[in-house]
Image (cartoon, rainbow, N blue to C red; front, top):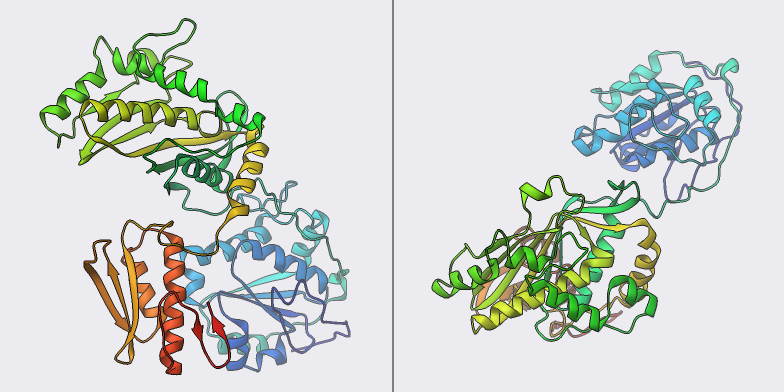
Length: 505
């Protein structure tokens, strides 16, 4: 192998965050896919004798990091992409290296998108520099070879520094993240569950701001939309709302008189002049049928019925209507209490979510009184839960003030009740015992082990708890129990663990 480099090495992009391993000066770089470079070098130290810099590629974001490092190191003219790791050939692992080869093959658009994909490259990196880099640096795909075979292949080939391909050194400003862009998520199917109407609604708003996709509406405006979120409200008393700025209260419809009037309209069959429809009209006079009365009648005859339903969408009218009803389906089921389930095809969460909920609560209360039963849970499924662009800032400010800046760092069982029960943790007979108990004290599941990991993973894989903060709390307690077990010191759940060196609260 011929080497003729006298260039300075050692400049890398955020090396503490994105580790790079330096070797002997050469025009060669090694990009591993989902293989830990430190472990690899320990197993094959001869890599450093032939490869100038070694780094790994995990994600599509990593392509921008790779480009930055190559632009900072103009002596590199060949990049071996080694993807022998099993993880590099999973669905997630393939995305990054496939996009990397696509960039070298098809190039990049003026919008900093890898041609033929939706993958973006840091907009701060100059397009001319990227295109010159693609032209002058050769990407070499190493697919099925072992690392020893790769090293042999490098030794057998002549990789000399080509003066005509010499590049200049470039660095670029840090990327500025687009905070309006949605975070990675499951995309469809979310759950918000709290013990108050306001908190549940606020969780839905936060989900939309965080995970909702920016899309155009049928009216041409923009929205952030989340598809299929179910929000469960367990507040049985008069809903409580904090004092909010007057302009916010007006936008979200938090006005006592207006909510009272809206709730009344929800139960009345009368159609107001100048409106396409009211929910009360559709529920109480749907083709001359009072659906609410029919639901109550069915439930009185048989409390276990699954046929107490009402619909509002009328295909004859609504497929051609410019204002079809957003609420489409209501169902009532009785399980000692009256539970109501509602489905919205389209749901303006920020401006209409609270008033819609008040109307449904009024309907639920009306039916519960007619059946002489208590009101239970209200569950709303919003298939298109959205917030319009003009409300994004107000929604974000409200979420920051009322939710994100008020996060409690302690799990309190009397406040943060997990409906699936409580977990009792003990150190007994040289092992950790974790028992899931019902609130009546019945033992539901018991796991015994030596480590926090094996116990909490059993709880998690079996979905035995319902709250993320409960999982966090139990994990902390199990870790304390493991430390106590290994150090032979007393452990008591929810009490500080006192060790000779430190205290864990």
